[in-house]
Length: 364
Image (cartoon, rainbow, N blue to C red; front, side, top):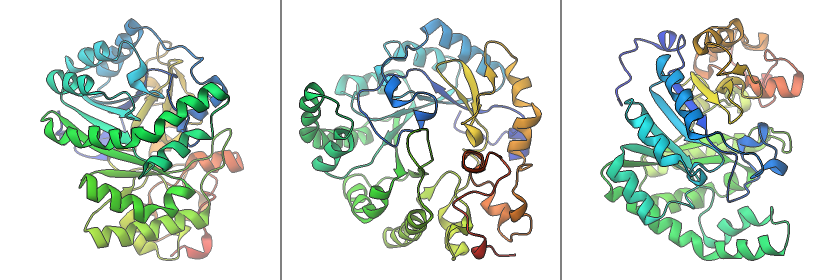
């Protein structure tokens, strides 16, 4: 299942929804202000929207399998808060679909890890945005709305060490692998040296993926100055620790003057594990990763493959929305995509230039 090379090229992959992000709940037990899900579920709705029933998700999985999805990322806000998660995992496993779970870790107890290892072979993608107890607490404190929440959040002060202990156990489980996911917020960028040191000291992790902080309905995306700083820090830290960690989604190379460094740090929207991701929301709606600010159609009301082959989707996947400013850029085939979504948010067009880009840095 891990060998996806039976497709000859990304061109062939773009004809099918091979990777899918399946959102199974809008419930979460912590309140991160950088959460991507603010697009579909503003924070005021958090924990108020209900998930679908297990049978609904089985139907969705059947549809995905029919149209060649063979790699599913289970997400939510927090998927381990869904009471039917293990039943759904069993159903997916029996179809020989590879499983990844995107989680904040807080519900990964010993019994949970043991059951995952005994019954499944999967990848845990854990959000990592802190390197000490205080930081872990501060991330969530800002969303406390009343005394009850504040009292509950104080319990986070002793939870961080438990998180570290629990995550370190994963290396002892033969059927579980661990990746870290970190959104490049200004605070994380300023603390990258400390985060690198912490992760290497505690985990010696092979896979750690960095993500751009996108604009949402309530937050503004990362600034050009800060993402420029992140690129140079990641490049330098990778050299120091002999690593190859990447920014795995869309950032234009021309955000920095040194496009060669950018090419070594930014994996790009059209990297093999990113360009063909379908997203299914808890409202049954189909999205694509390149433009998850737009809902395409209900998965129950239209043939998924037909939706995938719609003119808009195929144009998105084949760079039809390439901004005119990028036509003659030396790096356009490496930079590959940039954020069509942020272009649309800021300038009402998917063909608009990414607001992070700086034409003065472009190399013709």
